[in-house]
Image (cartoon, rainbow, N blue to C red; front, side):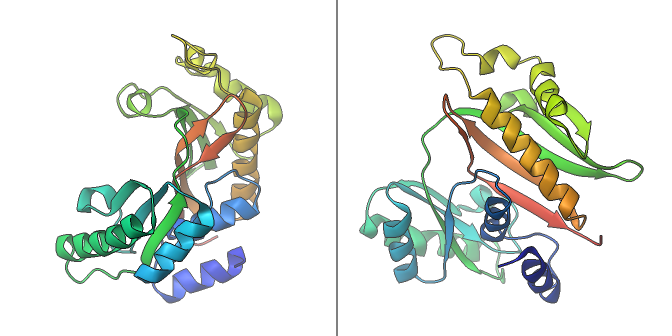
Length: 232
């Protein structure tokens, strides 16, 4: 679906938060590297989707009424076959309904379980005075506790993206430490630039989070995505 079609559907349903499947589809269309994710509304659709994306897979509940999926038992990891996927589908739906009675369950997101990489975060928020601002940092404790992040105003140029990466205190981690492989800095730079272009093209986007993005020696991949919309 086009951005306009997704926006219209969300507004018709009274939503400001896009589903993970919607967010990833739009970002993938914009050239941002994201893990392919399919929406399954039934047990059988989940199994078919798992066959399509390839095992092992991750299942996540999709609901406009549930923001933190893992908190309600709405995430299942490392599912290896159709039987496990079917059982996990039933479980995450039941967990969500029990944790949030009356929640609207759109379905379950099915995605291939990407191999672990160095975790980084790419985000965007809207400043009331300056407009869209992009953020970059290491994932995990580095962003949650140490607030080790850098910021730039949209739109970005290549030098801005490179500076954002080089400015964080944890930059040596991306060069490889304690036997860890180095991250593909060029891929991270292009990810930041593609997000900047996406945000600039769609002023209705008020918040955006790619967390985590796995940085590999060759490439990068966003495995979770969140987009909040508003008026342009």
